[in-house]
Length: 315
Ligand code: TXA
Ligand code: MG
Image (tube, rainbow, N blue to C red; front, side, top):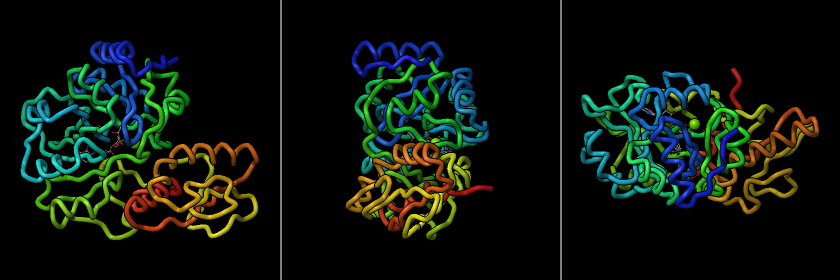
């Protein structure tokens, strides 16, 4: 069973030693918990795919604690520098061209000539990465296709039997994964909605290849079905029907409310933990569907609706 490590000097040293020995450690970030390993070590990275049961065509994001090491691995063009100055440390992943002959495991990139990188803002994550003294490859710490984790307890429930340790950092502040933007294309392209709003990206970069409402974005791992609870979902529900539980947004009398006041930031922070809770409630009381209130399609609402559509998708 995974050891729950405190985020103090002793715990973080233990975590970084596990990484140096080629093991995997789950750690908190401001978006969601990540499952980290040394990005230069093939076997360590393979362990991430095994623990998550993740398809190997799906590349991983590399996490750094500052810009110094990044320079060694990727070409920092104008767009990357502008984005880094505006949004790092923080919930933005930038996909850029990987330099030739780096020692990054090709499992991390799935053999692509690009790589997704980010500097998280969570203090515990930064200290952990600094102690590891290596780029840290980390997907979200959940079984592939399932609901992301925003507390160490959720990580233990999800992956506790297959990883050695989790650093406890309380609840992830933002609660949704990073926004992903690809700057390796002639015009920057949005690959995933997330913690940074498109409007804010456009303020820095000018127009980006964005997406019309409802389009499924196509980062390699952005499968149509993702973030799935066991119970089916019905979206944009005005009311609870028979045999349903209601996950509310700004409505009274829901079984669980993402935000009673209809606040998108609060809803994002609650999203994954509430998906787990409402799925558990539905199973407990034998409801066969989770109805979800409409969520406005702006700011973080775009990221929430994207995740809801994938969570509702059944092939
Ligand atoms: O907030 C986050 O980004 C969290 C925390 C832990 O940092 N991480 C995360 O990782 O959400 P993951 O693996 O669950 O999602 C990363 C996504 C995947 O859909 C993957 O396909 C995409 O990023 N990705 C990674 N490298 C890429 C690349 N070179 N080109 C296009 N997409 C890439
Ligand atoms: Mg994920």
